[in-house]
Image (cartoon, rainbow, N blue to C red; front, side):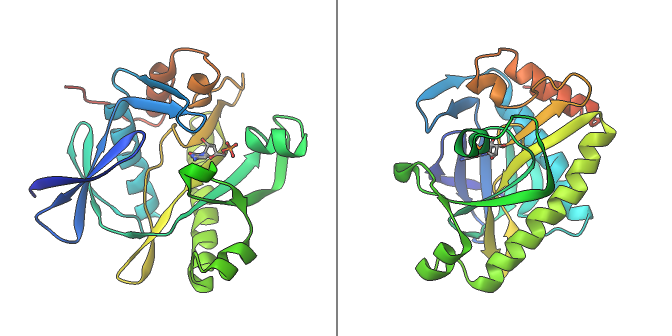
Length: 239
Ligand code: C5P
């Protein structure tokens, strides 16, 4: 596998082409951003931690029958993935109210949501990723109806697998964001699953162990991500 040209640099990851037209390399950088890129910092070890954390989660999901783009780790902060045709939507599931839903609906942070709720956002930096509904997806053709159905089904299946996984390690999976793409016409989970894109609280103390530590300036951001990994039995390797 030969890594070639940079295809795209996002806020925390860079994507490279390879000598295989169906494969890409993702580089997890230490860069961390919040509030549409208004708050930015490079955090030591974060790229390696998120890459290895994501690999462990993607392997769990794959084993549970959820198709993912993950192929293999390439180094401490790089992995090989299938090249997907990305669908420009963010799928969010919330088990507990936190973050934007608290501000939007004036509900209390920490309220358990039964059933868990599902939200869609349009991936558009310039517009600040606005919340949309399923009719918008259909009217504007952002995804085929059957692909959207599959994305919802897989997003909830991820919830079943990961809620239990974190609970067994004494953590609450509060919410998370997933992105999907098409690989030879099949809906496949893309992007990443790491504490950058979900909320995790300690089950007993409700201490935040995710990117809210960065957003809210609570400190020990990467240390918290490492603690989440250690509780799941992940041993991180660093350069
Ligand atoms: O900000 P909000 O409460 O809507 O975020 C819901 C979940 O989705 C959080 O876990 C957050 O980290 C994640 N998210 C993300 N990337 C975005 C928006 C939200 O990872 N662009």
